[in-house]
Image (cartoon, one colour):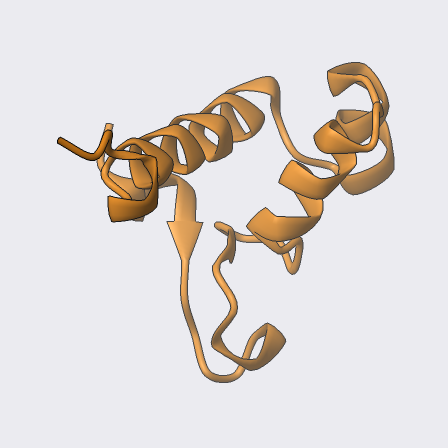
Length: 75
């Protein structure tokens, strides 16, 4: 799956914040909701996103964090 299949960045939508494609739901809201303890089922109900959208957001967050210099061990 390519990121462009699930997410979009558009200056006319949420000030260029990455959103779930075809919604105005920022990826940060999805991740923050999960971090706050909201269930995936509740997120899909509240925001109209799919479980696959939620998983894609988690995958992107994981990939970004794993490649972050802050997360690499120091020699």
